[in-house]
Image 1 (cartoon, helix red, strand yellow):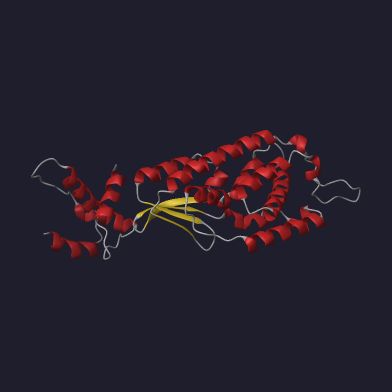
Image 2 (cartoon, rainbow, N blue to C red):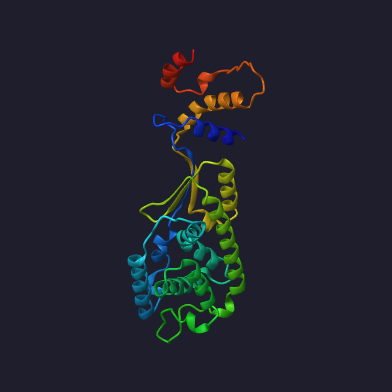
Amino acid sequence: MYFDNLLDYLRWNQSSRNVVQDVGFEFRFQNSFKRMASLVRPDVYYPGRRVELENAYNTIQKSRKLLSPSSQKDIFELLVAALSTSIIVELAASSGAARPEVLAVLQLHFISALAVGDLNFRRSISQSLEALRYDENWDVFVKDKQGNSFKSVNSIDVDINRMQALYSEYLEALRDISEILASGRRISIDESGSLIVLVDQFSFASKVVYLSTRLPRNILSNINWGWRGISTGEMAYTHLFSETYNCAKKSRKANYIIVIDEADLYLHPEWQRGESPRLS
């Protein structure tokens, strides 16, 4: 209720001269795909696969164009793209086998599918998971002098059905988040490819926070949120005015007395000097 009241006051009090103009909860979904190339050491792949991976990654970087989303579907696809690396890391960790080996195979097939397709991140992750079912798709690692692969994991060792079920759960959560974010006041993409959404309805913000915290830590680590457009000092400054405004707005009495105890504790000395004479 407190944050609802505060945002209500800030919307009412906005003006071109207002230092707290355009205030809300800002969500930033960091572009984890940028670190995809650094996840696995290139020397674990045999040379042909290594070149294939590097070429595919370079093709994606050159071809991908980031445009501001215009619909809920756009936001959903951007969320999956931004969090794709974290999703793959989490899926590899839940495979039931050695994570580094599974991650290396997943990464290769994901990047390859992404490069030859239409840069559909959601579908490429699904295709890379399905590729794990076939033993020939595990033949990606360098071999020793006897011809044995340094990595011994194969499709039998991996719980692919569980990985696919978890991926469906992540997509469902991100779809729910995208439906809420579609009502955001401002939606944009920064130079790093991160999705940024400003929400000025606290009920919506709290739902996004709740849904985000249900995601695994690998994915959640790329989601940040907090107040935008107002510092902690300005928050204290507006607290008094917000409470007074909402008291007056919701009171059914024609006359009332508002007592503010130790109000100076909320206000910066400079604000006290500027505001106290005006209020008296």
